[in-house]
Structures are given as C-alpha cells and as structure tokens.
Length: 138
Image (tube, rainbow, N blue to C red; front, top):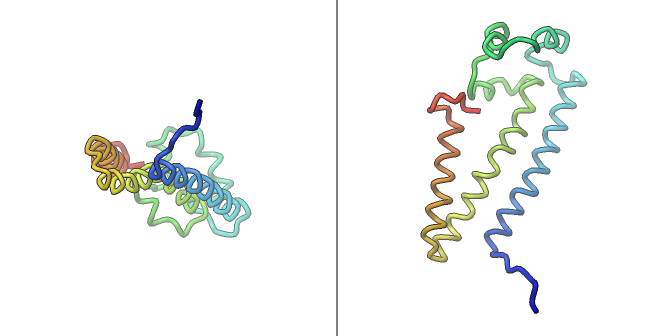
C-alpha cells in the first residue's frame, strides 16, 4: 500500500513562501524591535511617555499622539517605534504573495475553479488591506 501523499509543485512553493517569509518577518521584527528598545533609532513616542498612553482607547491614543490611522505609518518608518511595522506588514502580505504564485500555475494547468478562488482571495485581501471599506487598512 502506498501511503505517500502527492503534493503539487505550486502548493510546495506556497508553503515555502509562507515558511521562509514568516521566519524572515519574525527576524526582521526582532531586529527592528532591538533598534527601537536600545534607542538606536529615536521613537516617535518616547518610551517613558508610551506607558502613560497605553490605557487610552485607540481614538484617544491617536488623537493625543497625533497619529493618523491607516497606512500613514509608512511615512513614519524613520522612527524606531514604527520601523517594526515593516515585518508585520510583510507577515500580513505573505498570503497574498503566496496566492499570486498559485494563479499562474493554476492557469497553466487549466484549473479554472482554483484560478478563480485564488484570484478572488487576492482581491478580497487587497481590498481589506486598502482601507477603502473603512476598516482602517491595517
């Protein structure tokens, strides 16, 4: 009896993207956190100040710190407390990147249903991340 499971190459590629992308993102988050916590990069909000703001509701926190919601964090990557968002964003984008590699493979194999599912998944995730629906875009 043959108990081996046959895995398609595009599924292996997707798994590799998730595996290496996750570990790479985690490593990047650790590095950028260390840059922040050891003061190598100046934070937008000083560490001594942040502890007095943690208890605030999000809207009040954003108001008191003059931070805009959504994708404006990209403009603040020069600050240590925002730099670590890069690893988080990459981690969040891995599913989209993975699905984008599946679409051409499914098209090549004539897998119309899988192509449609992967395409819709990418579109839904991009729409959700965009903030167009009022979800904040993050």
